[in-house]
Image (cartoon, rainbow, N blue to C red):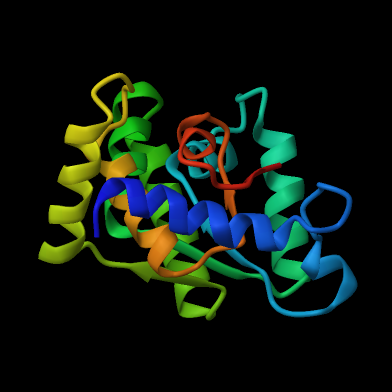
Length: 171
């Protein structure tokens, strides 16, 4: 699948979800179905780093998603990026704390970790090559592929990378 069809297919699905007055349907508020949420590194970092200006917002949003029974997804690349960022920008202890948090969430069935395989990596490279005007990392590109394949309803993130690829980003 080419990158043009990647964006166009995702945009079509997103438009179907936004039929209510041009605003995204809040499926989890109306109980219509379980919402699928892909969690990006920026959200994991905000959840872990208690000194972050986004920590309280991230925590409230994460707890609301858990309470609503959202299907939470992330990837091994996102977690590697998160742990590395925390190790170098915060502390070794912060990286360990985040690992423990995500491992516990996975063991409790709250979080599903998607793994990057060769097919995902190759599709991610095509996106990376196509969008030379953006500063997407390879981890970002693998996340776009995995989130699209999982047909997520939204992305929990604090940066604009997913918006550029036309995902619904919250909080």
